Image: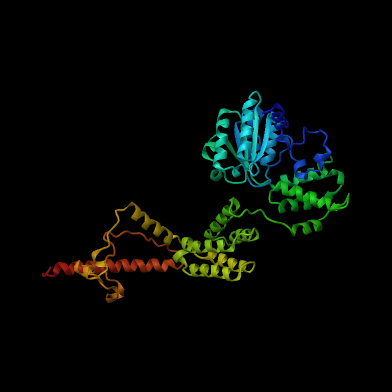
Length: 464
């Protein structure tokens, strides 16, 4: 491997995306880059938001200041500053930095990078891997020896839960930092900075915008700073030089808004979890909000309807048995009519289930029954309950002494239906289940009374 190739790969200390030191001139090439790239912070002092990671006394700034960090994993939603932090850290430590994108990289390229890091052991190397969750297990395994030996310091960025996508050995060798969507105040502050910055931002356009417009833009972008800056650049460049961006222009822009919702990824699971828990917690407003987010995000309405069917039995059950047929009918309606009208059916079903009395007795009952089977011994079917239709069954006494319930008063014979009876169903006293609980107690008392009467009759019968 030639020295020229090695030096070209390591020529930038800020992963090839930085704008140099504060106050340095900006080239024409850099000015053609998107505003979100030009406005990236150049040191930790310019980073806005993420106070839980960068605030006074926090761990990450201390590690960077003393240059004592090992490998880092940044996990958070798009546009929250994962790449920015990686580049700032590389800039502040002065380390050589190689940037890879796991979407475009391959094993051969990764081997070359690691080989060069070992070759240039006199200098520290930071390997920044964007979208690291895209690396498969073999590619992640390839990183382990050099991370372990300290040949590289890995900084990985991912929008996906590392617990599901990053192998355990790599997780155990890295500090994991969770980044949150940027707060509205931080987004507005950076938008204002970009609008007024004549060096890297949009100051040369002399366009202005009031606080109400910047706040509205921040809210539209859901804490995604990249989206916010790109949206600001689009708005400004669509206006004449020196004009003011008004709420009317923002309203036109907002019509094309797309919310952040990644189907089959973290956003999918987090939102459906919030939806289910809101219905379970009898909060119709929150349930409708999360339902609307899924609908606007393009979630499969059949998936939502299926979850409502599960919820009808899991969390409402016998407290209101109308919930299950209604949820099942909702799924059928969704399949019949499709979107967007199916949203009305989902809203109807969601509100009904959220406003139902709640009981998880059916859920707990089957859990107890399955646990009893697993932790056994498994009880045999009592002789008097076994099928007696076959000749062999009759010869073996199957069904003998079975008491036909309808021949007994109140249809309660007092007979047991397990060899060793177990209390598995414990009814709640909410909604319609309260009446069921009362009925069950009455039946238990009748059963005990008639069983005792049968025992007494057996003792008094001299034939026995």
